[in-house]
Length: 140
Image (cartoon, rainbow, N blue to C red; front, side, top):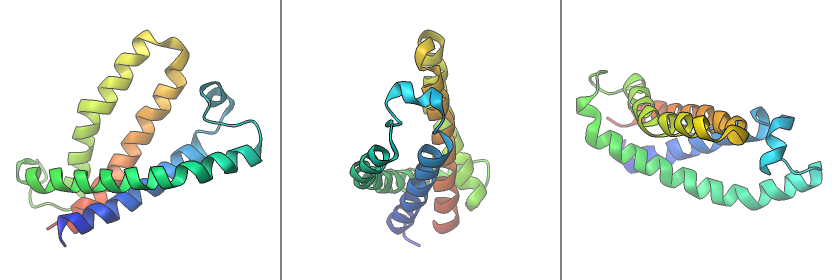
């Protein structure tokens, strides 16, 4: 399958992973201080409706860019020959070099936002691995 189509499909997978992480997993009271949880369910629905199209477009762009990088660099991965494991390896390396180190480093200095940084840390790992799995499965 062409890497652009695989990237669009991976973007859809990343969007749903992101929706589950921020809509269902990170909903505790510790997140209210960061403005991620409006006080009422009606306000929550309004916020979600306004932000879903933006999140979907960003997820599609993310999937295409991830697929392009994977397509260019898959020959240098430890998991030779491509496939879902290679896609997850690539995604985890990207996460480790960018998101993981950034959020851990920021958490050293910013005590008050540590719960938000932890949520970002894990949500990006899930999002990247879902997209990496799909890209690795579809890009040949």
